[in-house]
Length: 168
Image (cartoon, rainbow, N blue to C red):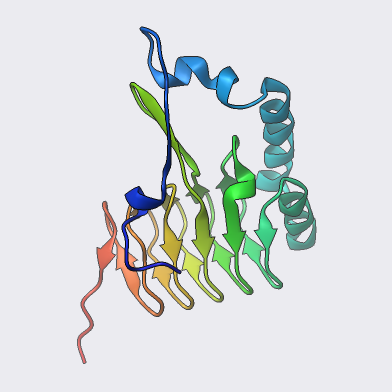
């Protein structure tokens, strides 16, 4: 996990030319056939109750899947660039969480890897943005928006996700 720079420093920026926003040019960025195949496989991942099948399908998309990963029902990897996701051993990705490796903006699109450390947990409905590293044993609360790295052993919550204060 990289903590010396922000996720923005790790994003690959791709300017788009023309009068339209970058999403209008998505077919220049990724093959429509590849995205359609990814979508079908992701649909199966989202609905399958079998963790073994989910992990196998995630690996077929190019996700680096550690041993013992638990991918929740309706959780969604990036449909365009799932191969930019790394999940450490014993990671839990909760129900309806989303891991995005792309951002389509007005005049550019950005790509970034997502690294999730060993035994990290991502709560239900959380969204992880491109370029984010989540450290070993870190926890992301349900419905959080993770826009910055989460250090190891840290718990974050909210929109945007911020560290929770511990009362000792």
